[in-house]
Image (tube, rainbow, N blue to C red):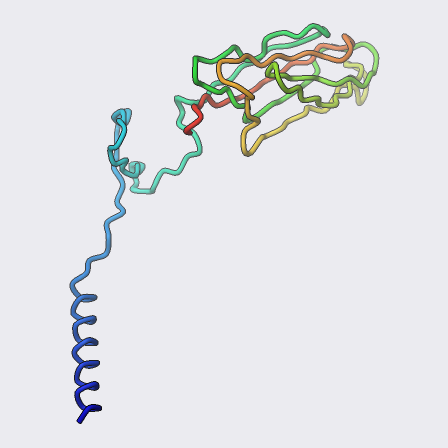
Length: 181
C-alpha cells in the first residue's frame, strides 16, 4: 500500500511539473530600436537592449560619442600634448596608435615616448631616409584591447622622441570613459 501511495504522489508531482513547464513562457530578450539618440539613463532604471534596423542586437565596446581621434607630428625631444586633458572624472584611454615617418635624411633608431604624466610607454621606431629605393620607415600600428588606460582622470597624454632625428606623424584614437564604464 505504501508503494502505491508513493507512486501516486510521484505521478502527481510529475504532472504538476509538466503543467508548470507548459504554462511558462520564454522570456523576451527583444531590443529597442532608436532612430535617433537613445534617451539618457538615470540611476536605477532598466536599460533595454538596443537593436539595429534589421533587428540585430547591437554590441559595442564603446558608444560613438565616447570616442575621439587626434593627429599631429613630433620632431623634438620636448614633450608635446598629443591628447588634451579630459573633463573631471573622465579617463582618456588610448585604443589605437599609429606612427609613421614624414621626413628624414639619415637612418637612426629612436624611441617614441607617450606619457600620461604618471606612466611613460616607449615604442621603438626606425627612421630611414625618405626618397631612396627602399627608404622610409614601416608604420607602427598598435591596437590596444583593452585600451591603454590613463592613470588618472582629467590628464593629458604627451608625445616626445628620444632623439630629434626625424619627423614622426601620429594618429591616435581614444575613448573617454568614467571609472564605472
